[in-house]
Image (tube, rainbow, N blue to C red; front, side):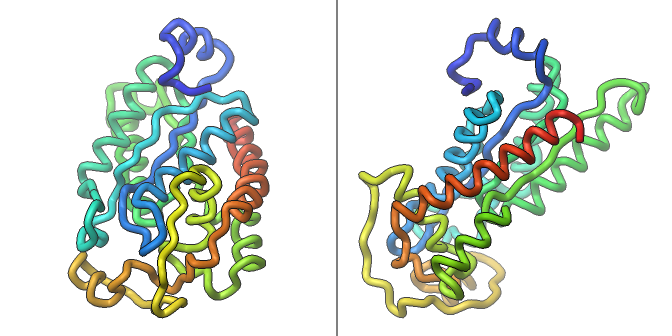
Length: 249
């Protein structure tokens, strides 16, 4: 059930049976020569919608721009500063909390968001603790689930791609987008087929080290049918995790 397709009365009624909500979060950044700029947001949204259907859960609008400063050397990439993303997450949670939501299940598609979103959770908890009467009233609970870290995702990426999965512009995430948007499948010559690996600092350093945007990956292996396999395998795990969290486990 998508929040933006509900009326306020439907949400108010839903709050009588559950205090939990799913929030997809991703990024808008380059994903190599054949990967869509919206890959991380698309993946988060696709998984969130599937989990929402499986668990009969409410799904908030996707946070589509994340912390991606290191990708700004590539056209079309967008970023929020860490402090801005913390404020966005905090304001979204507190907006929903005002209406009675208490459990916030974030499905994440971008590794660069993890530290910042975790810090946002700490800010939310600190604000609850420091408010007058803190500890005796509202007590929010937040969790972050990276779809690509789920056991089924890791197992399938090893099975399908082995060491060519890499860490950015991976064939697994590109496959999910190909399945979600087959009309947007891109073809490109990858040279070398397997991108180099390594660390980086800012956007200029990233562009120097990884000139086509990939890190350790070969997204030329991506297939739409692989994306469906990944989705079908990971959604049950995410759904189980959501249900346990929503129920207070």
